[in-house]
Image 1 (cartoon, helix red, strand yellow):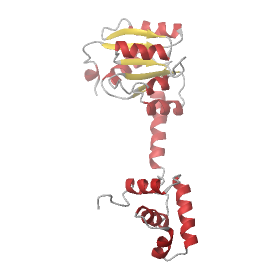
Image 2 (spheres, one colour; image 1 turned 45 degrees about the vertical axis):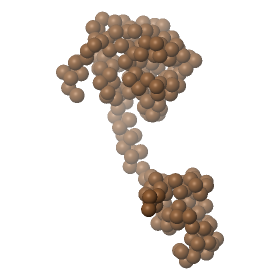
Image 3 (cartoon, helix red, strand yellow; image 1 turned 90 degrees about the vertical axis):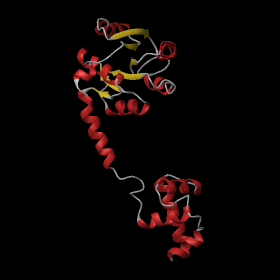
Image 4 (spheres, rainbow, N blue to C red; image 1 turned 135 degrees about the horizontal axis):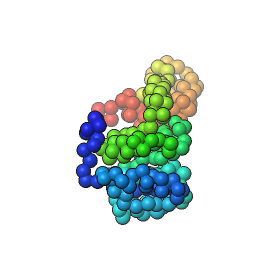
Length: 224
């Protein structure tokens, strides 16, 4: 998205400020109040008040901190599932990637550090309003690196041995431990050991759960 595309913002973006520190809130208001494409529709001093304002004012973008009285930023995000059109930008002093991941998993559309320049905050508001995800440049590099590391980590299924996958498939097909032992030509005790290790590795401790997992992994076809 080019800057020209970002600048095409009509009508004004309705912004709600949610910040428990009066001076910080006043500073943000000061940065945004003279921008013709932004309308500050309300200011909340805690998370509960922010949620009430979101219900009544239906802002396009909410600027909030993670640390908030009554409802913190993450709890506020959890309550906004019925307001998919409202975008949340977390304003925080914390560059820790775990804070960022928590916010993104909870549904935040942006994460901006409080020491950011005014232009960065303006761009963040426009970006999330247009359906983008915005991260402050200082943290985006670390988040991308962390994402790539997680993406390259072997999944639980990939960590299973070929024997464990066989056991999983046979369990999902409804075979008893005795039948599994006969099919694989191993002892019943060995089959039980494999099943126990399989459950521990997948952290699934019942047969129904193993069946659901096998279906999800495509080991069996429920329609066949």
